[in-house]
Image 1 (cartoon, rainbow, N blue to C red):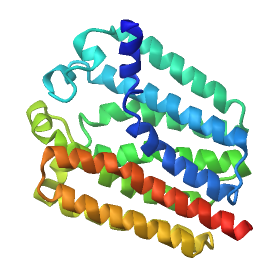
Image 2 (image 1 turned 180 degrees about the vertical axis):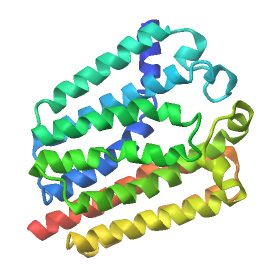
Image 3 (image 1 turned 60 degrees about the horizontal axis):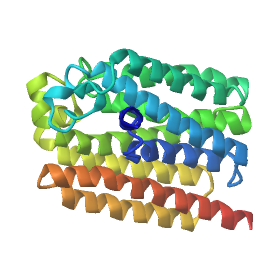
Image 4 (image 1 turned 60 degrees about the vertical axis):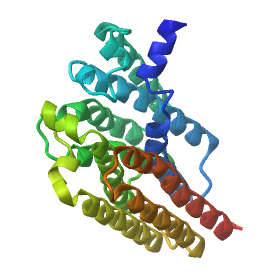
Length: 286
């Protein structure tokens, strides 16, 4: 049981926030692509696939950071950092998770399968970008957004311009919430030479986060106009905007605990957008 608990924590199954932040944009795309009526099969494949790939990504991230994590207070108790799981075991686990996710994609069409390959590359290479890329949060935004074109491909066999707009909105949103997360680790990142948006933006990081929220919500409004969505979707965006404003109140003092709370709170922002979208499409169909 102790070993299973270590694997569970290595995959971050005890901390579902990452899975939820990855899942919401995928669900936005599934509902948009299917005009509010996604098949149960597609929903099951993408929900399970999201969980598997997020878990695999966490394992790969900890493998890449196994010599750094012991020196960071927030990550010092992760299973690889403490030696509860060996690098070999972690590598095998990451491969198994990726293979099961790939098997799920094999049940979809050829375009979805083709898109899964760059998605896997992005997920696997993201941990390395923190060593040399000044804005790894942007790379993460692209990686976290790849479920969007895959969802459109699975539903319609094409990837329309609307998917690109949704990916752009998710990119801005990811930079916003992951910068909040990076504010928690700022001192450790400086000491260890790790790049992050919190360091890149410097004393303007709170302003940059709010600009990214405005850009994300503005792009989501553009998506709504392009998809002929109505007032209910707009109401969902207003709720999301109120949540973003609440985040400003949390992060303006730069208190680590409050910045982490703001990061976690993004689950509600993504959910607000989804509920507005799903309700709008349901009402339009009825």
